[in-house]
Amino acid sequence: MSRVYNFSAGPAVLPEEVLREAAEEMLDYKGSGMSVMEMSHRSKVYDGIIKEAEADLRELMGIPDNYKVLFLQGGASQQFAMIPMNLMKHKKAAYIVTGQWAKKAFQEAQNYGQAVKVASSEDETFSYIPDCSDLDIPEDADYVYICENNTIYGTKYKTLPNTKGHTLVADVSSCFLSEPVDVSKYGIIYGGVQKNIGPAGVVIVVIREDLITEDTLPGTPTMLKYKTHADADSLYNTPPAYGIYICGKVFQWLKKQGGLTAMKQHNEEKAKILYDFLDGSSMFRGTVRKEDRSLMNVPFVTGDKELDAKFVKEAEAAGFVNLKGHRTVGGMRASIYNAMPKEGVEQLVAFMKKFEEENQ
Image 1 (cartoon, rainbow, N blue to C red):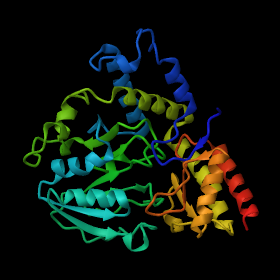
Image 2: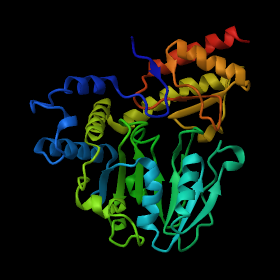
Image 3: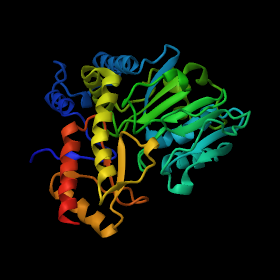
């Protein structure tokens, strides 16, 4: 069986080179006589793996020295609670709701204090990013929260919100490491890795040190305090050790590709192939306002549910898998993360052209 072109939104495609390397090391990691899966997280060998992964991530993102890198569990969804538990000192935070995950984070925060929705694009099925240049942010808000790239709806902030001096917290799960980033603009930048970096089970949190304190909301579990993990260098308990090892391999692969500047160029080229086709097609159309389009997730429709279903079925038979859109949007969605090769997008567009000709 040859490998398919996997357009899944996550867990998603990983670089083939990384998978082959991991396969070669599966039974014996660098002469240790065992797999990374079997290794104590307290061992010298594993300590080298997690430290190298952190160093490579710091280099890729240009993470300033006053930020900690935490490799945690519980996915982005656990951060929806962990963020207010650790940051809501005045019991108030501002949320910009641009999709399902931002909405879930906003709802979760209501358990811990007053979550104020300062902007939303729900009025048009989250198909755009609202203007965030002059929002009515409460003076005593502890932070402003965004989901920077919306996996389901295919939108992406091109300009960060004007937080008016408040700490910015961003979920970057589906655009993590897809382009250069100025970490200093954020208090916390975090994401689940299963879309653009590694296997499911790891969430990476990059957090400014002044936000890591003992002063959390009453009743915050030990495991949900950033300080617990920061003080123990992500080894307070057994971390998702194998997942972190794969992330580390992806970081090295990204460095080999030329880092995040090269990745951005590569991603723009890929996305342009698909968006240009959608813009000129008489059958398919994109669902997102042009200036807010994501480079990672591209939703599109024909306008006919039966035709959409036929397309998804025939695409799968042709080796283009996981193109069905999210149930809340319908249609199709191609997730074209870092590891999706350019030829995967070219082949998909060729297939779409053929389908259009045969089904007019």
